[in-house]
Image 1 (cartoon, chains in turn yellow, brown):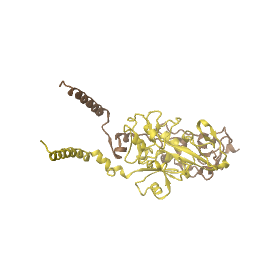
Image 2: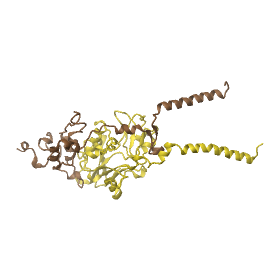
Image 3: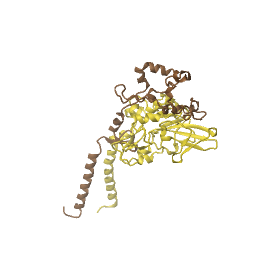
Image 4: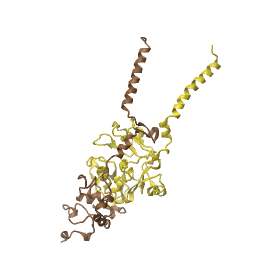
Length: 264
Length: 162
């Protein structure tokens, strides 16, 4: 007959014995160690960031054209990895926003494209301010799109770029829904999730993204935030920059100079 | 073995083994957790290389200047200096080996990306010399009169002025 004291002792020994090998497996899981020791791998000295200067954008849309050609997104399909929005704020406090087909051919008319509601004329005398806002993937530090992917087809690389594995994506569209910035869409040819990746094939070769090279006004810049000498890092760390939808906690890494409160 | 405990247990074991075997066959070998950890790092490692292998189409103006130094030097003196060659001449691809590249866009549509006047004071766009595309020679191509590499008014093509 076992008494209470012995029962407790033996239970503790058995429970302890069960816990040790489990803990040992956890500690020596090399992938877990690699994941936790971010900073030990060779890529850790690069973290790509983007800087958009709203004062410099004229809405020519060369960035959108270059992006679509470079990344093989069909030119006439109404989807794009990057786009430019026009904001026209009138003196009565109203804001008109448009981006006709992502502004792939620029903004060539004063009329605001309101989709099925037709065009809206705005009297030039009533305009308080107007500006253009280029948009692209924010390569968030906490990417909501990655978190919701049920199959691990979208992920973040060590240098901060969120990529989509085209052969692994099942096309469920959770990421398209999950992105607070609406940068994701289905590729009309591959029928899988598609997004801006700062032209990963260019930046990893020492080039700049196609949109950066195409912009004649220097409104788009790319940099490495882990390099304190990088001119873009210097602007981000020393000047007044903003990000989009900071309240979502996604920690976006596309920074804007001259962002206005009307921008959504 | 023929009792009510072992038979269902055997079925469970077969199902579990089946699932594990399918998993081993379907999931790529390099699928795992990488730099960004459990929440953001699950992926097939070789996919990074697949993205890096995408063909570069726009080779930048520096590559153009390698052969077309005369055109490059002409352009950098003009007010259009900041515009990359490939914005109008089309992406390089592997020009001159690859005939896919270099389709020059001389269309009106290209010029009015910047030169359609928009009354946005205080922006760079408001300061660019602009026209109303519906009123300024609507049926003519801009390049009939204007020289894109040197677009100042006095450089308008002579035949157009006379």
